Length: 253
Ligand SMILES: [Zn+2]
Image (cartoon, rainbow, N blue to C red; front, side):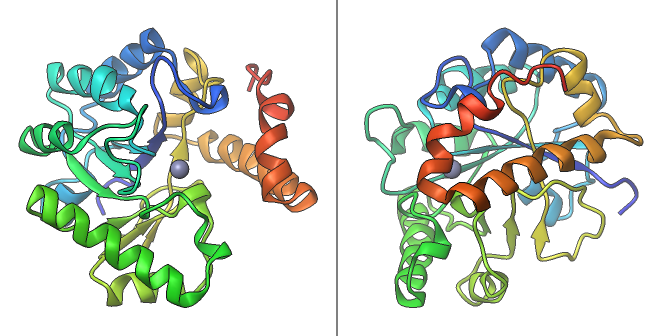
């Protein structure tokens, strides 16, 4: 790859269930303006895999929150940007989430609609039969409703074990997008790292994360390491409950 793109991972924009992962609308708009100025996000990950030139920054969203349609989608369109939207197919059309008609409209405008699993259960908490069912069902539903089956998979909570890439490939997913920080260095890598954009990435903190150059990975890895340590110490359930209080005030980078 000529450049090693940063793949940004967003969740809700403006208002969301989880304040840690919700980026304010004005902040998001400023971030998109910055990305557009860098020549980033003119293509989605799927576009790049289909042969488009890789931009310096790529944009993805997890969870299919309604704000992705109401807030992010129009802002992306205005700037001629594209993104991946990883949705839980069981949540599509539920209160607070995008519905199939909206996803169709987004897909027709060039957005890439992909799988975040069927439910949002962690893949590592399922039996192998349950996991297989989850991946098959989610991919097929997206194909049935939108005309193109999912080819990309983002595991909920970033939870995955070493067998996931092979299973995903067997079931028709060409890449897994992880939550582990890093850059997309080689086009053929089966697991693509991403950089989480959180409420704390305001102004310069966002640019330090997304801008090419030294330093951004060190910060992202530090944050990811702190979260991973908290997950190990607390277990998934308690971790989810205390995450906001652990890191929610951490705006200083
Ligand atoms: Zn998620």
